[in-house]
Length: 242
Length: 284
Image (cartoon, rainbow over all chains, first blue to last red; front, side):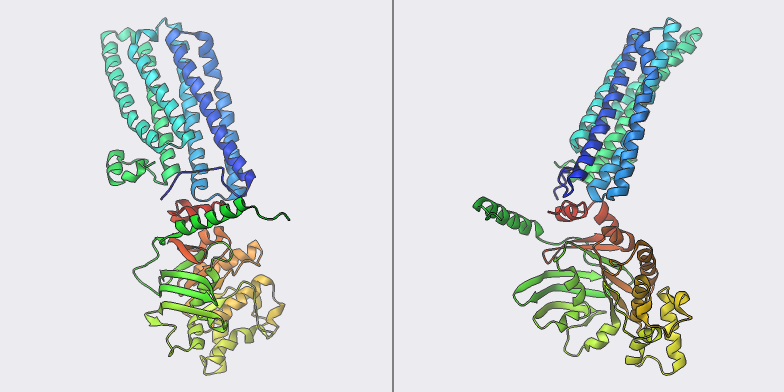
């Protein structure tokens, strides 16, 4: 059965506007968070303290956006009692903004680590793997937001699967940093901060994955959280149908 | 008013064809393992008007089934098929296989009066008889000879009022007219009157549409309790009500059963686009 979701087709035009506005607000929040991540990574890479300070303090805007969207979702639930795809949209948004807010928190941490590392004259630019992981996570977040706005299940599933690569990269960085700490115990404190920065990036990947799972739920009505996705897709090939 | 342009007319015709094409076969789970009612290939005509078009479904014992759909989709007509209320309409013709506990209810040997004692009905507007509260409830048991003594009749009246959640409010004024009660109380009185003849199935045609939210909540609570002993089919225009009280929901459109399935599924992820459009307010 056709499952393409069109949120602009209600009898009530105002309801269409409310849902459209809600979706735009999520995209705006996604944009803020993307910028936070980008700035956090740049601050780490270039030891840019102005940018680091900005990232460490700009989380308020993301938090305010989360509260605003939450309020609008509550209003829609109360006033419209949404059902079916509309209900799934509102539920998916409530969950998505929670994950986006966490991504904002992780990006804020990147800013704080950049400041600490700068004070100790440790430059993350020396760790090419972190740079690579950062780029990977940025692409994943951008694809996630894209899948969300286009309600694109195929793209969401591909993005969910790409989280495994990020986890592998993180494991590799952890092994590398563990060896470094064993070689030079005096650098443990700074190396741990580098590890935490990598950990923050890996967590962002997890949040992006969660959002992609909500996209699958939104479009297909299928809850794919905590499942073996490969087995699930084999059993339900229609999940990837356009 | 300006006359309809040819283009508008063509568009309208196209939309109609589209919808008819979309209707197709019923989707979902309209059949159950156990059946209180089993209906196969039911058609209803009002003269030439094909009001119900080849509907098949089961209603399981002790379940609440909600019938939803836009006005004129045939849900009330279908409900009335279940206790032959349509017999009273001269131009109405019903065909198909309709069985209650395996028994053909449209068989010539079936007495419609006895059938309606087994399959009771509650209407949209509370319609108590212009009699006392007591007599409203006692009327059915007297008619069907269900009580052999006054004490037994008293017992039936009190039990029915209690089950309908009304006894506490009226036990000291049973001889007062039923019409003097509030709307919500009158509706519960009608439910008490229905259950007084020990039916197996209760049909409800928008039973709470004329009631305020408190009276509605009381009726809904009552429906949930009644489910232990009765099978209930309810027509409602309130989708929230269908979602709250029923185990399965059937969506009707233009006299066809479009989709039937577990209520939770119908309201979160229906299979049919027409169901989705209706419950999300996209029906145009």
